Every structure is written in structure tokens, then in C-alpha cells.
Length: 209
Image 1: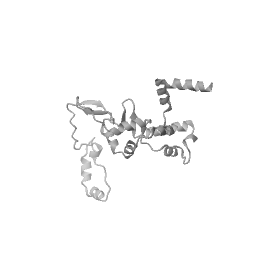
Image 2: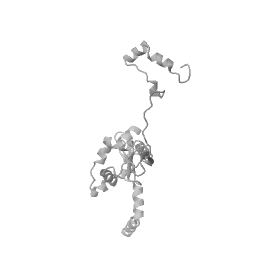
Image 3: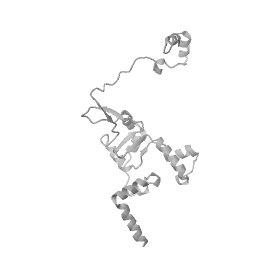
Image 4: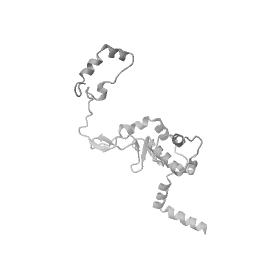
């Protein structure tokens, strides 16, 4: 360039026989348009008369399956590879169980799993959000805002559709869910709020005596 943002020399180069020959053989350079140097502008969406709302995510209003999924899932999110795969990626372990890891190693696996989630569960809004959620959507003041495109695209994700269509497990079998998938602290808080925790402690004390 002879001057800042002067593309005249570039245009001359693209028109030369040498450049055209290289393009025909598969050797191509990025267009300056792809690097944000000029070029036609994409038409902007017309958001006149709309308001900004937080993305509502995928809720029961989006699909009845969402409510069933939320009623059987205790995890904060899903979509990451299995913990066995994560253990192998982090530590090179092939035939090591979860209980063989130290507490620090388990925390590392859990954190790595959270970082690789494809969707997250929000208990406060009873909704599911893509990790790449756009957070803000446009809608008319009187209409219910729709999920953003990133959240809505979860329906095209194979892992998500498999998890969504999984049947509700038998309640008698819930006690066999591995402890590593149970939020122990949340369970204790819930029992305290319901007054069940105090009752359980009284029963335990009575049995001991």
C-alpha cells in the first residue's frame, strides 16, 4: 500500500496473469472484503418498534419435553464428553475410576466438564440456555420474546435431542444414580428448608439410643 487503506495496488495485482494462474491452481488469497476492507454492506434487520429483552431460553413454552428434562436432571449443564474421556485427556488415565482420583483431580475434571458444556440449566428461570446464548433478543412490547438463534439451534444438536427425548426414569431407581451426579449440597439445603433434615437427625439419634 502506498497509503493507509489504499487498495489500488492490490486490485492491480489481482488482475495480473500471475495471480490468476495461481488462483486457477488452487492457491488463493483472502479477499480484502473478507478482511473488512470495504465491500458491500449486509442489510441490517429492521428492529423498529421493538424492545430489548433478555433471552428467555428454552422453557416449557418452547417444548413440553423441556419440563420433563428439568424434572429429572440435577446437573447444571450437559453436552460435554464423558468424565472418563476427560480423565484420559487431563491425566492420561485409561482404566481409572472416579473414586481413584484425588479430591483435587476430581475438581479439575468437574471444572473441565463445565467449560465444555454445550448447554446450561437455569433453575431460577426453569429454562435451558446454550453456552453461546446471545443474551439479548428483540421483540415487540406486547409479544412474548422468542429464544435467540443460538438457544433455538440446540434443537438441531444431536446430543441435546437425545437427552431431551430420554424417558423419565422409574422413581424407585433414582436412588441408584451415582453420587458423582448428585448435587449433595443442594439436597441438604432443600431438606433443611422442608424441615426434613431435622427430622432425619432426630430419627438417627433415636436409633443410636
